[in-house]
Image (cartoon, rainbow, N blue to C red; front, side, top):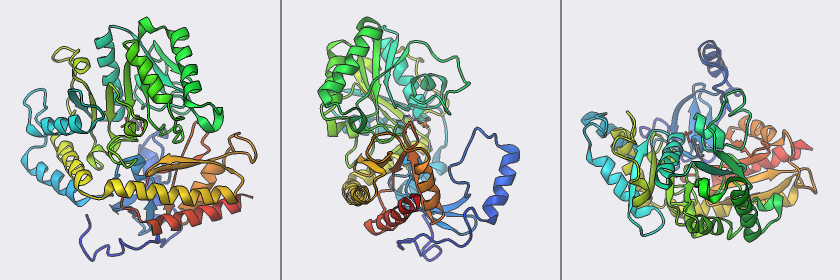
Length: 447
Ligand SMILES: *Cc1c(COP(=O)(O)O)cnc(C)c1O
């Protein structure tokens, strides 16, 4: 939300670098930071951001980067979206906190009504709000266990569900998330996912493999919930084979197992629909939201079937900041923007343009083994040519090359060999072209 004229270069298509990357001011800040912030809190690119607008982030040295990560899919409708910022600012003047579980307020109820409307299915729902994605995951597991009276939870290979202790037990990757942080929560199991590029299985075959694990290694009687990201985020934008998720959900329903869709990265416009579950004809029992829900403010939600959500007794759910009024006000503006703006169409436009350009890269560079994604959630996987074996190191080299050109790219994948795109939905095709041209150069330089 910049003042007109002050950053009037917003509509330009190219990044602007005034210094080396990181520049002197960022380097000075980084030195200060290293004296007071632990190593465990890393930064992908230590350029210290001073302001942001639409798809751009500008650092303290005046370098303007095209942000193709949106703070990992958070500022989906653009950095400092005017409607979200205005709504939050107005709310700051009215009330910042009461604690909904002490004295409630309307915004919480309104946002729950909107989620009831937008999640897939026509069933009655309830929504409980929390602060972060991991907290939504924690609450979903509590609710599913209370509802079913069962203890076990299954997550998929290549999953990522957060950094709290329970979520660490659900994540695929030990390092860096879990290593040394155990013991981990018991009764969390990981089962094979559908990863068409690597396993070559169709949806029916992949689902049969997953279900065999669920039945043999956990047993239906003990299984409270299966949690799945419709498109795996951290895992490398793995889009499951057609039919995989519906078959898995159908098995869950038949066996009284709660099916949880973790839409924390995929939800709220990112894939061109409110929820990515829609692309797979899924009607999840519980849907988790966070990341993009409040345009950059911290908020998360668990939305689900009334009879499941109502299982915990009063006082069983909550938390001091959960459903903070300022975050809620921003979220209501995000919903309004998604409802009335062009964002869904933009997500589809970005998906079509980006996937076509990335397919072009695949045709020219043998290391680009797979291009995949839905809407404004696209990725390519780097493999040893002629194989599906992960090509180590290349993705971070591409990201580093791009950073030196003012393009902020994120890597992903359990093997770190995926480049993922989570652009703001305000990103133009022209801006995407600038980024893909730089990546093209980076891939040529790999040889
Ligand atoms: C980011 C993410 C989480 C964790 O959210 P936090 O807000 O970081 O706790 C959980 N699930 C998925 C799919 C995510 O992308």
